[in-house]
Image (cartoon, rainbow, N blue to C red; front, side):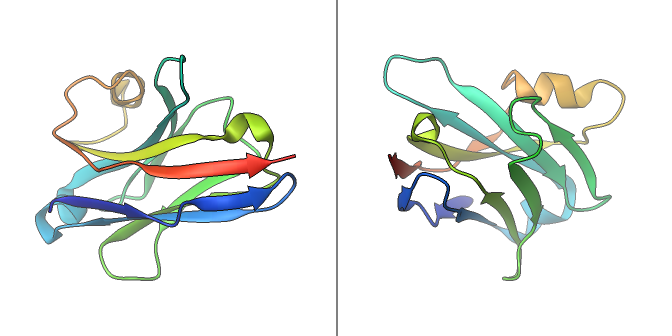
Length: 129
């Protein structure tokens, strides 16, 4: 398995959850990795991306301030810390990886899902009010 997402579950509104995406070594060492989500009846939404090799970041405006992406504690992982959760954050969350970086406009194309090499299986996040 190239990407493995974990950490989903049920949280109360206002609570926090931390998702983790474990990648194979060759992905973590050179790819950009990020998180998307999709709710029923809605389009896929980009949240945040990180390139572990140079720590470059790219965020969706909607994610700034509540969602934080970082290298995980576990080896070859990228985590998404989600705070102040709202019922509208309920979705299936997917991690994704693409060869290359996030600088010089590449973050925008990553956010559009262009050229994604690997998708992880989604993990369900449910936020109750």
